Image 1: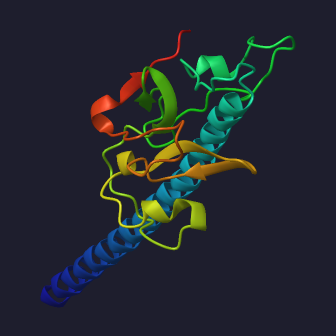
Image 2: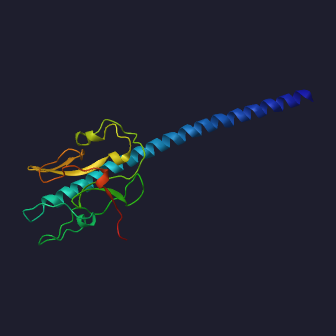
Length: 187
């Protein structure tokens, strides 16, 4: 009988080791899935931020009066009725993929929106290797530092991701989080 007990003990230890190894493997798989999911959300944030900042630039560029102006709200980008023919600078207000919310942080100058940022305090996985226009995002401590600011040039629409640098004489002289607000869309 004694030999049978020892054999059952080894089987039990083997089963426990198999469960532990499976747990470690599942934990590693979960971490890989989380990382892939986070990187996909970062790509979505770069896309949404770029679309909104381009829409803000188009709104500014297509101001019919001699005094250029930025939009007062993000909703003004959906239907711009300032000219004889309404313009749609943006099809929809994107959801911030990092917060899964329709609330964006707004960068403003004189009550007008010049850019947006995610309200997520999370630390980005992506720290370098950005496209030229997003070089200012390198080394960011949080997604709030990924600020999508509209800018202009005489030869067309461009973007600036450094809101602390003047874009041009008609644009932001200094924009920071102190002047930022939160956009909450009306449902």
